Length: 308
Image (cartoon, rainbow, N blue to C red; front, side, top):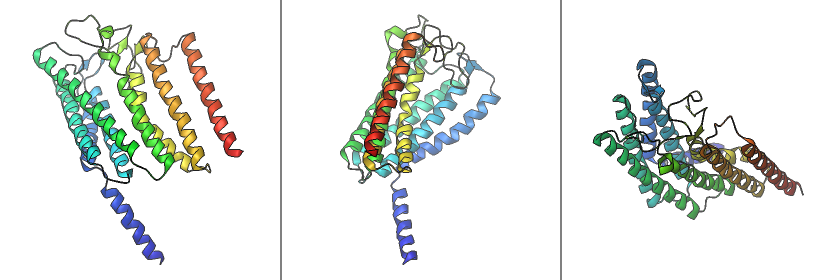
């Protein structure tokens, strides 16, 4: 009997693994390979673009796309039913990943920038292609989120983790919009946007990330928001390892999701006011403290109701 049960569970697990979206897994594998190649490029190629090693941006984007592809592939495997819409959206995301990363790698190999670069007709066309592909990514990601909302995922806490992760990562994508608005025109010929606020791109920055240490940096809110896609499902998983009941876990996830969304907005607000992440002014500190206090109070209230 025990052997039969074990075999049944093994077959069930195999079927679940077979549902992982193959195009997204393929994208993950390709990007993982590029992580290795671009990491080597950082050490071998001594060229510098906007104050950073020329292969650092391709490296970071390779890591990001690899994690993104794997996370979405897992999320689609959790859905109780296959969705044609979600699968088409996943293929679109794979196409966008190939286009985006292909352009970033080509421009790095040429020793120039990929973002905001309109110095030649060729560079301008590549930048326009990146802008169009990002819009496709946003819509495809949104469609997967709608599918996740429509389907009834058995574990409610896990469902909320996935849905909140998908929704908040859309907020993270939206946090990048100011980078290409007229307010971010750096006044440099043939450059149409910037991620730094109050200082030129390419100045002093934090290790690896390059986030500005002398001005605001819109990449911070963008980065934090995007990784809600991993953070909220991970929190849902960790909560399943506690003694909390399902209702409590859902409420805690809602508190965490609300706090996470406000955090993304605070980071973007801080950047737009030309403040480095590690040098907040009084208003920013008050906002941070208020967020921490409200989150702690809401968490305590949820736990008190559980005990009661």
